[in-house]
Figure 1 (tube, rainbow, N blue to C red):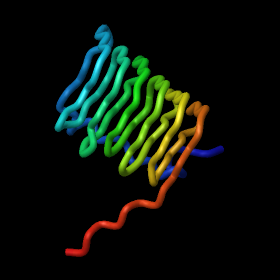
Figure 2 (figure 1 turned 90 degrees about the horizontal axis):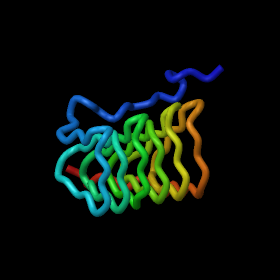
Figure 3 (figure 1 turned 90 degrees about the vertical axis):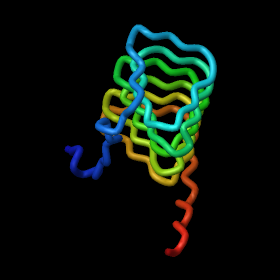
Length: 127
């Protein structure tokens, strides 16, 4: 049996989530922010959070092209997800579409259907 500890999952830090969009909310369009975002409702369009985290709650349904630093999937996403740091597909999550990230974590029970591209992580500049 594979446990959560075996994956060394680094959860998306919910204590730093600054924008929390409720479960009855339905949005169509473009979402961009300079802060971490938690989606609980329905979203269709594009999401751009290049330096921040996106968390998709278990009851959320997202149909979008997503770009973020970190993406935590506990709900359902259809579309494409590009994460600069990592993508975490949790046990309650499902992803249909293309993923691109240097790191991908899929918990037991997580559903994934699509193409996965794992380019090498970009080196951090020397200090």
